[in-house]
Amino acid sequence: MGALSDIKVLDLTRVLAGPYATMILADLGAEIIKIEQPGKGDDSRAYGPYKNGESAYFMSLNRNKESITLNMKTPEGKEIIKELVRKVDILVENFRPGTMERFGLGYEVLKELNPRLIYAASTGYGQTGPYSQRPAYDAVVQAMGGIMSITGQEDGVPTRVGTSIGDIAAGLFTAIGVLAALHERERSGLGQMVDVAMLDCQVAILENAISRYEFTGEIPKPIGNRHPSIVPFETFETKTDPIMVAAGNDRLWATLCDLMDLDIACDPRFAINPRRNENYHFLKPILVEKFMTRTAEEWQEMFDEAGIPSGPINTIDKVVTNEQVVARDMIVEVEHPVAGETRIPGIPIKLSRTPGEIHKASPVLGEDTEKLLKQYLGLTPEQLVELREKQVI
Image 1: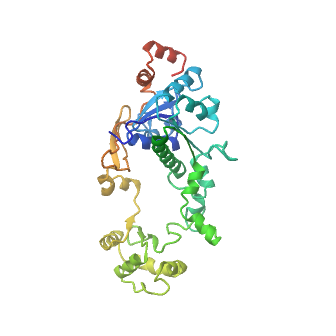
Image 2 (image 1 turned 60 degrees about the vertical axis):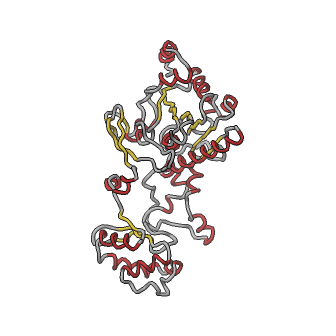
Image 3 (image 1 turned 90 degrees about the horizontal axis):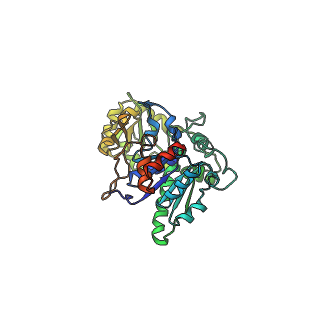
């Protein structure tokens, strides 16, 4: 039994931020009833690459879920949503603000049907504010949220983070908000609305960029792979491959110098982190020259033995075969009914008593429609045929 095995979620989301949030809940045991548009489904079903006609993009975000096809624009479709709302704990959607209200399915309507309902809306800019009606995608939010302005090589152009961090951060915060609301419901007996904006989330994860600007008045810029406040904390070339080294405090700095036979640990220019930052351009050439005297493998072995945080810059093919990644079950095999055997990322949250589980690949479009409508609404075969004829399901 998963930690959330008694929780039922009505999932009206598509593409990435919303499906990522509901996937987290699914991995922890919640039952996810995913509503998809008949004949089309989640937009991400159209994103390649494909295996036997099934989208890898969709499959990576929708494991452990069940799929119902439903036309929410029809009167019958809206009534089915309302009936399902009465029977679930959580509804998650990522339409533009106002869309659910136009369907007649906004939070104010649905909470009257189920006062315990937790209604989570994950949108580009949130339910309020002058941008609330703007459309948003990950790259746009990365640009507006500041993360692109501090990403990339020094003196280079602002660069999008290689993964969809705008969507993923929103998915993570949505899941956190839902779990907080679930906990509070135990006290009050009431649900509430969870309003998460992608732009808000980008601002929230800027780490110390905002505080650095507020303290110094200097606008942070891209600086490549090095840390803006800690030295040495960056990538260095070696005889073979580059290696990432993070000497995060003065003790590690002294250990690094000793290990590399560098007589500069107590140099007044470098002895403490603030001085190393101030004199970075003097220190960097010394380290660059020294790192080129050994291979990455040799440095890695020495650093591991000395307890200096470091690691290779793995390409994806090396990540999926990395012994630590494999040992933590972070690459798992699932059997998809159409695509066949596929390998996907595992569950990063490890619970000791109620561990998460990947028990089901992503659903084929609408594969659970009849089963779930019979189970939750008690519809007869004749009623289901009628709904199909009306193109409701």
